[in-house]
Length: 465
Image (tube, rainbow, N blue to C red; front, side, top):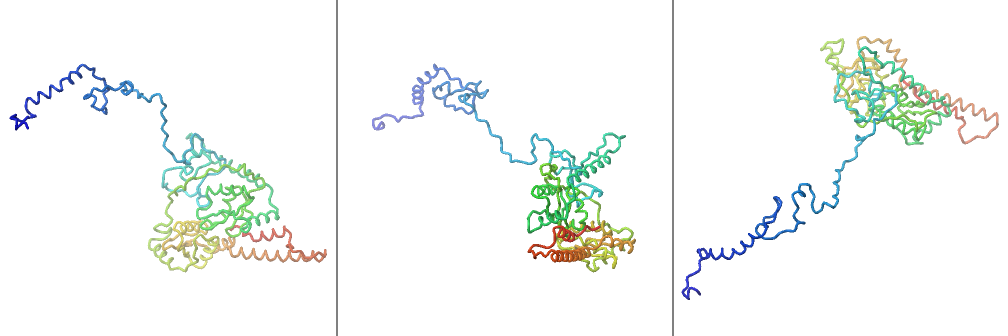
């Protein structure tokens, strides 16, 4: 319209337009110049809109520098909620302020009492001396093999070793305590009653003794069973049954009980007349199985007394020798030692088939045969135990050993014969008694409890001596 009326078009970039805009903003600039500028704390996160507008926030919304430095503000009067500590799962290793446990048991604590010997000296350890009882849980030091009951540390160079005298005192104290707890011997009637009470058809309580033998934690299990009964049934299978005499001796020694019945690998352990469950000894538990130490090699490059060529020929000959027996996994091996002794009477080399057995099992069996027969280990190749009787083998000595250690079958046959003889005597006495007194036949057994206890005792297989 202005173009039609003769006016020139308006240019917003002209000096006139710029002057008009400045004149319109002049009142607001003068007004802001007379107002007091608000004092804000030097905070990075505050907005800069306050510099462009004339808004003054109230004092309650603008904390001072002191309040910012001391951490106080509008919510200072309110109690702040304390932060919860992070969750920590319960651990058996965390004992808190509790002291280390003390045990009065007068013997060294080992992982296995039947499968480890104090006389066998290792040549090294596979791990540092971490106590399997846990850190700070036992007042006995861990030597890597055991936790000794007697501190063998010498306090002075000139002082004598106190270990032998202290060990004798402990042995004497253990013997007196065991005699006190056992009390008077059991009568045949009491013995037969306890044996019958612990049979499979009467109770399911049983302790299984496997390839690790009598372990330390098994002592605690035996005392737990003794809380509910005077006897406990122990079933032995696997490697420890090669030397059942050692198993029986360690059971009686470490638990303080008495074996009143043995049939093969089945034992019944009696606790004693004066045993009190509430006065049982303190048995600290092992939390893990310690690593086995390093022992010298069982199979050496050359057998002692032979050359390298003779050793190679003997190993080849042993692999082709006839098999004496085949061992089953987790079987009963009490008759293995007499069988090897009998085999040496016919041949100088004996081979035992161990297919299916773990390598550690038949190596342990070989060590036991080396010490019990005695013999020389030749090879463990192809899951076979090959033993040699040695150059200095004497048949007369072997015969004496055979007589001193009768075979398991001979012991069983002798026990059956004694049982048959006693049953015939008991039946004849009962018939004679009935004829004299004219009593009627009873449905119950004719034999008295004493006679039956004697018959049951004949079933016990004596220890291999």
